[in-house]
Length: 359
Ligand code: NAP
Ligand code: ZN
Image: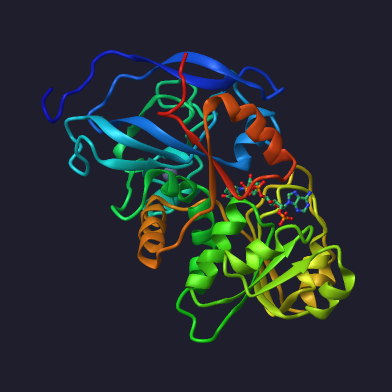
């Protein structure tokens, strides 16, 4: 094999797919496309498990295309390169996140915000340029255009890096506007799951004072002692919530369900921002006065650009942060999703793809 060996055939791979909206995963064999000049083939090593996977498997947010192979926090090893790929070499440890394509010439693409391109192609449950559904990282191998592949820094292990490719960059892209502030900002992280637990560490690493706002006190000790949070609020405790009124500069809202925005907006200082990243399956509500009387704002943020994805990996490595993960094999996948649904994950499942029995 030469350095730029290019496979001319489609390749058969094995993955795990949902066949219908029950969301139950079964082993599934399918073909991945032939390599183009700009493509990289990676052998998948690990893949993080995100709440969005669950939404997609169950047809929860957008229309799902079955069979659907989930997984968009992918870490793998480069095994083949297209002839025009100069950025990587065989054996490199690389990552792929939520998108694998975009148009390349709209205003979002031209300003390095390809995640907002209206023609972005999702890693899973998207339609690729060849007209076929894209399949995610719960699979032995993938072919991805080099633009949508990032390098994993030497200091990070592959399983540690996985959650950064979606959860990590989502928190980072939303929070980086507050990095380098000369006063100590008061941060709130609402929902301590996959995105929340990296958000807490990132906000701390940016020098902020961090309050976790959680639906129970079950994660309190961990949040304060292991993740480094400064404060912890239980959202159902009215006295605690009132005591914290108008105390926060921003809240990163990661809740994947309908929840009362009024309650959380009341925690923001004048001009405070609620940064919405959690996807609620039904409309959320607030009253005009909740914003108007405090010049507050609600903004949304969607994953991050490829540049930010590379940046968050470097940031995480440089600050010596550590995601809290539970590594699982494929035979545990369905149970892992059940546990995720019951809010029983500390704090990210990572699928050991290469270490799972494929047949
Ligand atoms: P996750 O691990 O399940 O964490 C969500 C956390 O929210 C839970 O740990 C829980 O924290 C809290 N929560 C769950 N159900 C709740 C309810 N009914 N009411 C109040 N709080 C509740 O999920 P994730 O992977 O972090 O993803 C979070 C959300 O972000 C999902 O909707 C996902 O689709 C979305 N997402 C968006 C982007 C983006 O680009 N915008 C990227 C990645 C993920 P406590 O126990 O602390 O209450
Ligand atoms: Zn575009």
